[in-house]
Length: 105
Image (cartoon, rainbow, N blue to C red; front, side, top):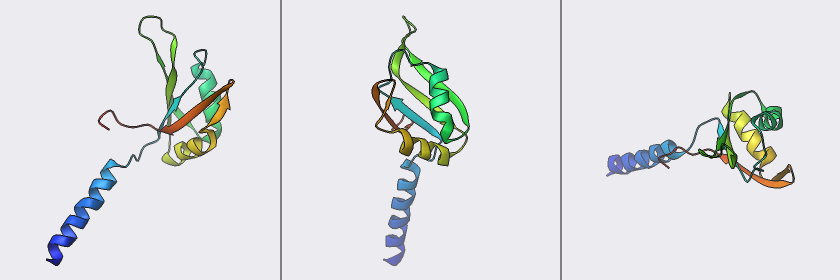
């Protein structure tokens, strides 16, 4: 009985651990359609070294859709960016910043 309880407890722990995002990529939404990748890099670089900025664009018009992904070199930098920029005004718009989720979530 103790073994089965321990096993189900371990499974629950590992399941939660796998579902948690240990990543260094953030999702930024509600951006102005005039936002550039350079502006995002400048805005978020104060939280750490950035590996990549991806501003999502409309396939036909090539205009920004109003959201982006920013990948940092470390998880800690991404966490600082979320705490420092979520629900802040950028370019006269209130933006939201959260940990990026995998496509399967």
